[in-house]
Length: 446
Image (cartoon, rainbow, N blue to C red; front, side, top):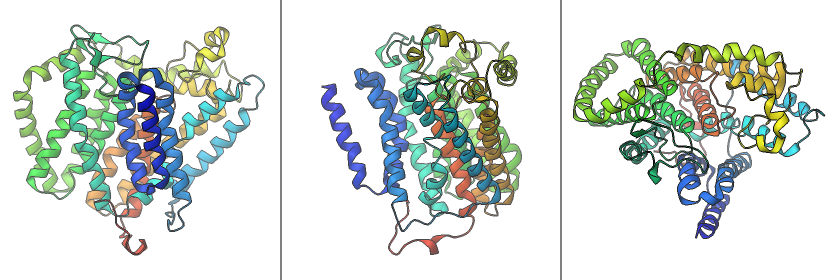
């Protein structure tokens, strides 16, 4: 049965070859959510095949995009161009490192290369996906609404026992739990992916609140935001919880005062939150209890870890590193036990990046991520359209908090980081009406 299902999925994905690239990339954003469900529930015997389907989809999107003659590339600002130049330099450096005799497994090198760069072209594609701000807001609304069934699944997981099939992780992984509650993952394979998805939604949702809309739509979006926060609590993950708090606080403190309507929405949101928390008090209180039961004693040490551990990694690597892909999930068994011992004490992303691509590669990689944040902040400062500024601010803070997070080693986090960066690249172009650039008869996403 699973073979028939896999064949049907492949046929469906192959239909992308005949699909408009804009629709194909929207399908990719949905498949990212559903991938884990197929890997752990519907087709557990085909985890690897399902894992690579998103790469197949995104490569088709790129091929169709660059093969579309009517598409005009967006002119970049100097800072945006600097990001792309650094990415090109990083790619060249990593490619040269792949010929190092110290690490001669080409399959693992190609896999690592894919993990680092497969979503980077979104910086070019996404600015042409959203041809005006209405299409961008339509996407945010669509992506927020489809969270509703995902969030309901999270509640069901939280209220079910840790041993329930609905709380299953990828085969061979133990279900994390605190007391009688499982730490939920939604439809994703692991908590890290679900956390990246939820925090991305928080940034999008906060940005949407800056839009001129009817009170009913405001209430719906605020309700979805509180539902997202409830799911974050039920993951018992301190990282996403802290990120969500900072993103929301930055929006309220920096942006909301610019317009009375936004302040009113914040006040309404506070009232609504009180009603929602009161109505769903048992679940919220259980979620808070599960999160706080993990304690806060090691939070500061975990925040410092990426900055401290990377220096230890630097002492054990050559100029070019030990090879891209060396510390990626799923490759350890291919490298042998001796190689495992050389990096098993590195947990944070910076140290693993340092180990894989060396000191120069690590500097290029993090200069790129920092410059993306700089682009976001400069975009926020220069935008004249308040509705677009409302998107730029929370997305910039989200990416800032993800500079040292596991984006290169978690494919879900990687996707949402570069998608968020691409949205920031898009906002500058949307600040000027671009409808005159559209081909005759073209329809944008509404």
